[in-house]
Length: 307
Image (cartoon, rainbow, N blue to C red; front, side, top):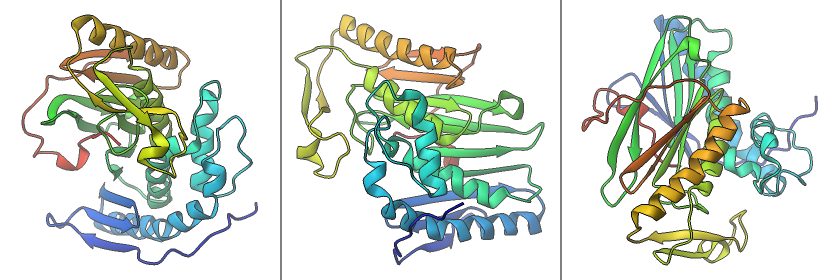
């Protein structure tokens, strides 16, 4: 198999966080928090394997950036592992406008996690890329993550608990207040899926679908906010004022329909949508979201925030 064209991007750094367990990897815009659980030698090998892969990811992505900013229906073939994960995650959504960049954070998390767990015997491991989380669970293991609904003051929105039997390997969150531009008005959409790349693109598209016509919604062309945005001149949300109850219900229903369609097609396991204090759930099977809690300090590394 041919290798991706790699551009050297200097400056990857790593550190042990204050708890002495988690690791922090940073390279340009990529900022990861990792943790593994198991025998000490296996955990150490996990971090080394993940670090070896992490140092090459950004250069590979930069080398194929033009292709990755092309709509999935028209994009040329890509060669890097992370780039191919991005393309595969977006492929089922080719009827919508989406570029592989919608899956970049999740795909990076997936790729680094895969490199770390390869050949290892671990109970649990995760790679958290700004709230898009790739998860490894051995049989019988569980993982808990808190959701945050972004607002002027971010609020705890609930807690998902995932078991190894659930087939969930990724979590991602998107919304108009997050780091990425959004076509919709969701405060947050958190998605559980087979891997983080699939969760990432699904969260983006569902958040785009949480929408309604309202004078309270202010939009601007994406290119005015970010000249390099893959959304071009498409109008993205820059502010959401006071919505009526009907507008909130209409927007959430639109997003829930999009999410349930993905769940019915087997593309996601579940999605939780929030807007102005209201919420909706879509899932391919019954799913429980524990009540919101005020303090995530028992598991801060797992908190899912909008990407």
